[in-house]
Length: 351
Image 1 (tube, rainbow, N blue to C red):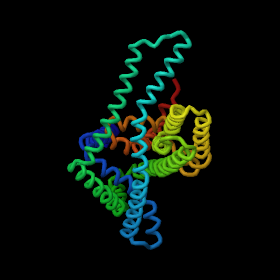
Image 2: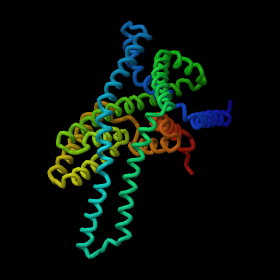
Image 3: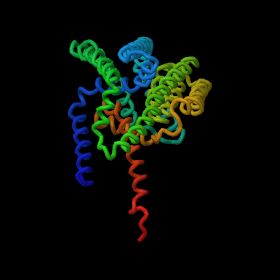
Image 4: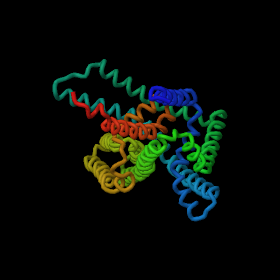
């Protein structure tokens, strides 16, 4: 097979894979989540297998333990988050009204009048915000009450661990089958590239997810401890968004300062919120990220942000799940292509 036909083959494979994802995106989420869980837990399965555990027992033990921990976490966190989100939805219109009055007072000091049209626009925004929150609450209640939605949720909850179980159980066989299909002349190169991608993913996904959980709890508990209303939901949101470097902390800081000011107007509470996020950034930058993620994972923060936005835009939630793995593989391939280009005669040729 010459270079042209080989290139066409891989382009066709990528196109078919992309078409498959787009066509079946509506049903892929439990399968993708199951594969993500399998990827996260497989190294521990391998370690247990190395100390003479049967693979099926190691898989079952770790998967059940993982699901129990996640279930307990959801049971503890969701009620608190739901309560604070409902209260937040009720207070947003008041904050908008307070913000409009503050802007009007500041404009008056500079001799600028807020026209009735502007005031009406602000009032309309307040009304629409309230309607959106109310509608969201009603939709959520309706979805949870709908029989079809409940059945779908149950099937999702059952399918995801089944996928994870069989993926972990058959992981060595899947890897062996993949290796068998590699072109013999390029097998060593492809294996090396896949190892680089795995190292990148291991450093980012396993490490960054742990960082997100720790930061979310730190921010949530810290903001609640200083007496900030909705501090826990703001902190957890900041932690979740920390999957995108700098975005989570920036969002959380702005929200915490805004809520502190609008609810109390107390500069000391604003300063305390700033201290919580400063401590969180110190903890992340000096301990969490270096220890859990590593310095050389090969994923630039802007590349991660772009990948997540592109994945979410193209394939919704499923796209968010596969965005970072795809970005890691693309990054490895680009670095390999640049390395090969620099070794080529075309790069070294002089005019």
